[in-house]
Image (cartoon, rainbow, N blue to C red; front, side):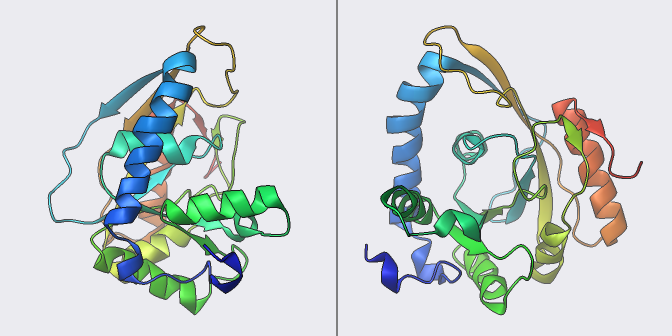
Length: 224
């Protein structure tokens, strides 16, 4: 892949294809489970809602580690595209190029968090056109303080403009990485119940914060 010619902000429906899902499955079952989950973590997955076939969702977890993307995909079990901060797509060094290339292959595309461009908005529409669901981390970055606060409302905008319900997810246990083999750390991934895009922005944000706080056991400070 020649990264110099790649527009990380823009993807078409054809870019979210069989190869994208195949790379996700390869990452989960060939790399993640045997080399990270099996030696280091006990993963407990709980789902309180059965996903409707043929219906798209915006998956909206809290964000506590760089491993979240992979474990979210494993727990969700459906085709996912990701919105990722544009800083992850830098290509100045070898390490940056490696990260950019692989998260792009996983189905991620870039977002300028200060100003959402028209290209990103169009790419979100292409995600749903390809019959993929979309993962957004409303916290905007990794937060390890076990609180729900300062939430970015961009995920609500994408839900309303695409008429897609929001599915909250609570992650706990990844706040500190465990690199002691076979001294497994317990982690939890819980999927909540959908929040209708037809609700007001204030009500959607309120329900998301409440659900994620309940799913994760974190303190909800969003409205305090």
